[in-house]
Structures are given as structure tokens and as C-alpha cells.
Length: 455
Image (tube, helix red, strand yellow):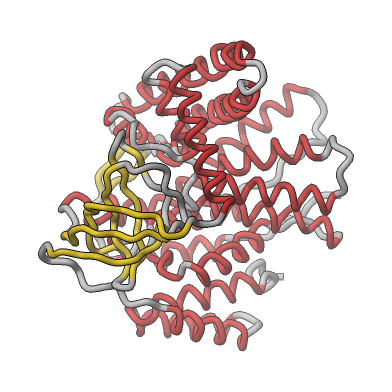
């Protein structure tokens, strides 16, 4: 059976995405909708979610062209970035979404309702491309900022977890290592050196250094392993895991990759309760459906696009590991081969979007990812364990950081420097019309074949 037809949520999710984009691209989206309705089952559901997408579509606010005084109530919709006495974040107001700049006045958290008194300004030239993709068209520079009502407690708990972890890393790690561990574990990437950012971009490994789906999967797998060994029923294991991932998602900023991976983990693991095998493409479509209903403007967010296309490519083209193979050497070779396949699929899935948005493509991404990815687990798991260990046995926490985390960071930096020094590590791509992305990704879907699990 056609793998797309066998997964109705893929068609439904595609209908919603087309509906959200339709007001800006009517002809193309209606043409694609017609193809969906001709080729796929569940036609009424697809058409219904297309209509829902059109209804949910939000027109962007008018771009701010000149500065003016501004006073309003708003809600913090991103984790504030703290630059040492100065904070930035995204503020949702009655006029739309804006970048918030404010002096540090204490812990403000995701979901807080605040009263702002300040100045509304145009975005800086170097910020325009990044913030416009998030539906943000101006900056609010606050003279005063007052928290009127705190956001959900779980998000505030996540913020306290993140802040305590950053302080812990500053105490236990060298000056250059601490920002990398902060970025890996909680997406706190604003202290990274420019040299490190350039190396990540050249090697196509930017997703590794910032908290993303890979990091959620590592955290979920570790927590699942621990919970499976406790006298807790499977239902309650999933509830506890969902709460932990919710707190972590809030701490890491509710970024699309984090939310996607968290929802996918819960949906995929819940298949056990219904005596079904996990299907990650269905879980991916379900998570996208939920996310777009609540955050419809994410359809234009670069992080959302890259996250979902990359994971879709991996789910379609990377076979499951066959752990029945005898011998450690055979299994090790299998892991290496699978790692290369994951890197190749991820590069193929993300390359068209990266070329469109940033004008460059990494030629060494699959190999660089294969070499660097193992350091992520080597850093994240011991760092998280050491953080909680430090509350009870500080000396043991320092030993863990010195024995595992510091060598892991050194290895990561060494690999980045080596791979980025290779001539022609990346190539520049001329600008092109985004319509060309449609046949490129349609071709990938046509190449998808169902993998039959051997008994």
C-alpha cells in the first residue's frame, strides 16, 4: 500500500499547512490541494483542515517604520535571553508580536503577562530576516517592565531549572566550555563565540549545538530507561515523562524542534497502550497538526520548517536497526552505518531549505554529523546527572563534569575546527524562487517506499 495513503494524518496535516499558507499563495496552494484530494483518501478531512487553516491564518502586523512611545499589556511568548543585566524575548500584544528589550528586573518567564512602558522601534537591519519569519515586525524597548500575572508554574519551574543549571556550569566548567554545554542542554546560545557559530554553519551541524529534537530524544530515552526500572505502571510512566518533557520544553523555549520531539515521543510511546507499533511519520504529522493549530504563524518559521522536513527525511529513508545481528563488531558497524544514513537523510531533507533561506549548503554535513553527534549524548547525560548530583554530593558532581563533560566538549570543538578547515566545506547557492521547493520535496515523497519489518 502507498505509505502516504496508509497514514491519513499526513494528508490532514498537509491540508492544514496549505490552508495556513493559502492567503499568501492562493493559486499554488489550491493546485496542491486539488492534487491531494484526487490522490489521497480522507478527502473531507483534508478539505476541512484546509478551511481551518485559512480561518487560522493571521495577517502580519504592519512593519514599524519609525519610533514612537508605546505603553501596553502583553504576554511573554519566548524564553527571555539574559545578556548580563539586559534581556530580550518575544512579546505578544494587541498590535501583534514584537521583540522585547528590557533591563534585567528579575526573573521573567515564558507565559508571564507584563505591563510595558517604552518605545516602539523598527527592527535593526541585521535582525529583519530572523524576526520576520516569526511574525515579528518591530522592537519594544522597555523603560519599565512590570509582571502583572505570572505564567504557568511549570514554565517558571523550567526557567528556574535553566538558570540554576547555567550557574552550575559556570562554577564547574572552563570559560569556553560552559556556553557550549548551556546551548546543548537548554538552547542558551547567546554566549557562543562567533568562531564557533561559523564552524557550526560551515559543517552543517548547527542543530547539534542548540537544544533540539535530538536532545529531547536523548532526555526522553534516559528518563524512560530510569522509569522502566521503577515500580511504576506503564500509564504513569508516560504521565511522568510527559510532565518532565513539558517542563524541559518550557525551559528550552518551546522552540518548534523541542515541541515536535516532545509530542512525537509521547505519541510514539503511547502506541504501546493500544498494542500498536510506533509509527514515527504519523507521530510527526500529529505533532505538527497540534503545533500549527495553536501556533499557526509557525508555518513560516525557519526552525519549524527545518525541524519537520529533516525528521521526515530521516523517518522515510533510514531503516530501523536490526539488533538481532550477532557480535559486538557487527552491531558497532551497524550503528556507524545507520549514523551515516541519518546524517545523509538529514542533509538531503534540510539542504533545499537551507539553500533557500541562507544561500549556502554544507558538503561535509553527513560525515561531520556522524563524527560529532556522539559527543552530544556524552555531554548532555553526564551534565544533567551531575547537576542533580551536585545538590547532594558537590564533589562527585565536579568529578563527573571533569571526567566526561569537559573531554566531550574538547572533542566537539576539535572536530568542528578540523571539519570546518576542509576546503570547500560549504558552497554558496544563488538565490532562487521558493516555488522550486515544491517539486524538490514532492520528489522525495515519491521516492519513499514502505520498509517491511522482517520477522
